[in-house]
Length: 167
Image (cartoon, rainbow, N blue to C red; front, side, top):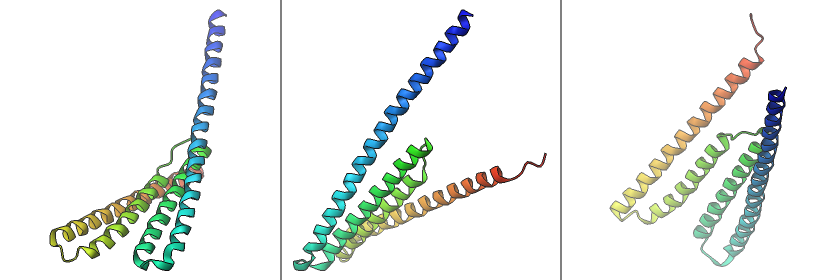
C-alpha cells in the first residue's frame, strides 16, 4: 500500500513538473511571438519611410533597400508562423524554418546580384559574386527539395492514417 502511495505521489510530482514546464515553454514562445510581431511592425514602418524617401533619391538603391526590407518582413512573418505552429501542435515543425532559409537565400541573391552588376569589370570580385549567387541558388534548390520531401512524407502518413485496415 505504501509503495502504491509513493508511486502516485511521484506521478503527481511529474504531472506538476510537466505542467509547470509547459507553462514556462508557452511563456517563452509567446514572448518570442510578441517580439517577432513588434519586429514586423518596426520593419514595415521602416519600409514605408524608405518608400517616402524615394522622391529625392536614385530609384535603384532605394528599391533594393525596400525589397531587402520586405524580404526581411517575410522572414519575420514566417518565423512567427513557426512559433504559432509550435504552440498549437506542441512540436517543432521544420517546414517554416526551411521557408525562412529560402527567403534568406533569395534576399542575399538579390543583394549580391545588384552588387555583382557593379563589379562586372573587376574580374575576380565579379567571379566570386557569381559563385556566391550560384551557391545560394543551389541552397534554395536543396531547401525546396527538402520541403517537397517533407510534404510527400506528410501526405503519405496522412494517407496511411485514412486508409481502412485490411486485416
